[in-house]
Length: 113
Length: 114
Image 1 (cartoon, rainbow over the protein chains, first blue to last red):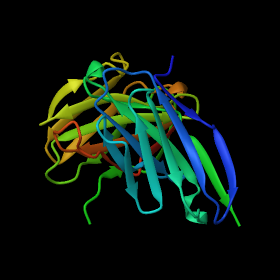
Image 2 (cartoon, rainbow over the protein chains, first blue to last red; image 1 turned 45 degrees about the vertical axis):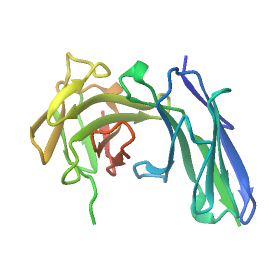
Image 3 (cartoon, rainbow over the protein chains, first blue to last red; image 1 turned 30 degrees about the vertical axis):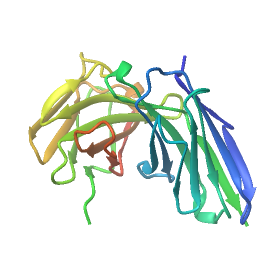
């Protein structure tokens, strides 16, 4: 069973709109949670890294939230742009796995004009 | 600017052939990861090294895959013999030795085994 579940699998929104992507994880204990953006044909690029003590972290128009009690995280994208079209991957690091990164399957976001 | 460099970007090979993928980590990074990405499985960790020593290769099929770091500027992933099910994008990433270090990914090698 995948330890990191993301929803929705895919999403289409209009340019300029906001959207929120969800991530639920079961790995415990937990070291940190990351959100990556992966453009088609390219490697993932880190957006945010949060430890269990952080509730929110922003990177430009991207804001990640974390609730370590419910083991949920979200990535909110504000005023979406066409260039935001990509796969967004939630990644959890846990000492249980030697602090290896455990990847979710990703949410494919398409922003259309 | 600093980046992880992978070669080749694309590789098509016949089943049974040996495949070697190379990675140049970012200078100064002492942790190197190899990942495989497929549509079905997403990103899977194959192996990772710290200070050139293999720390974990449990995700790698040992009978045909091997990963090495001959020096601090080069990591290699070899498949011998290759099989069609090995077709995937193979990513190398490098980072620092902290658990909170950011991992920087290369562009990947798209491998097709026919």
